[in-house]
Length: 447
Image 1 (cartoon, rainbow, N blue to C red):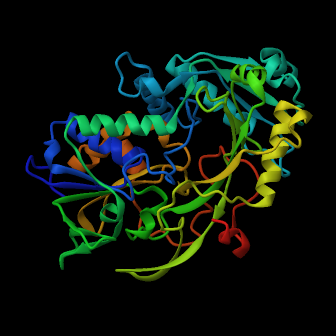
Image 2 (spheres, rainbow, N blue to C red):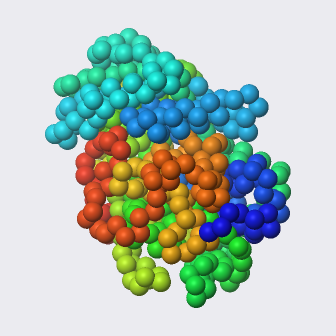
Image 3 (tube, helix red, strand yellow):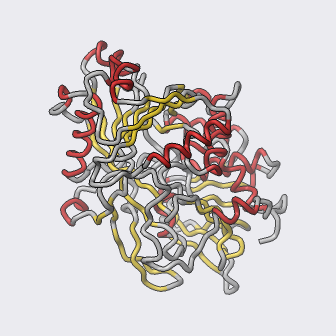
């Protein structure tokens, strides 16, 4: 694909973190906003998208130095005076825990945490060691004081420069800024892309939507998250997995205040994590950052029939609600472990499935498609992409222009020749909990 021309019409499929950031950074790079169109099943925030929720962790805590640097850049962008995204950001300490007693193995071993802390020191970001579970309880007596916390091999630290973002608000702020700058949006059936139409030379001619609308453009960006593999042939480069999330309604102002003082707390060995009280909804969000569940479906595209894991394709009024019973048990076990036995039978306000787009190593995919020269794929958030919304569009635009650094280009390359079984999609080493499995037919009926 040649460098972008000022007259190029650009169609972005997907109005989540990657798609909106791309639109915004195209305008910031000087591309005429009148030539940029974003398509999705509804105007953002798209209710069942993975970029929509009440909270996402914003941190630079990575064992990988490349992502630690990107995370620090994103963290600074969230907090910058006058930032579009600043109203959605809430500063909070981030406590990371590992242990050896989860599912028979240590998911995040001491070396993994040591690499994270090395990167924090390199970036000048403060953290504090917590040598024991008792140290954690002493640090947050009101929130974590009643929890057991400890397992064999317990280690922890708290990152002092971190926080969380109201995810739906962040997407809304990005959308509003794009609209203010003149970017066009198409939602509903007219924005629900069913397939891409190709010329004989492999270039994309248009996107055809559920309403029959055909949207032509010169350059296409597919940033459709977990739905990407249903639109573009990616081989076995990604897999979409459902992750378990739940929300608790706290009992009165005393509990709301008590748990507003929580850190963002994650046990990397079980995958379980919790956020402080959400100030608007008064909900306590808990979830598991794990290997997840798959939903395998047969799709037919230019490469013929193939099985992929994908969320249901119909537009949902809310995020998918049903989660497996074992998932509820894991979430409850985490509640008791961290917050105490008083939460053993606490009713869950609601549960949800959050869809990750996984890559084997947890790297993003931001690349021109090897067979379609005017198509850029931006996907593979792998459960850690949302925090990058203030900055990731800059790098996607660089990929479109052919100016992305060699380091990032090699990390984010789309390998459509990867075959099933080449990798276990184990991510970047931060996952905890049981192995990945397929949703059962009964569980699928609840999706």
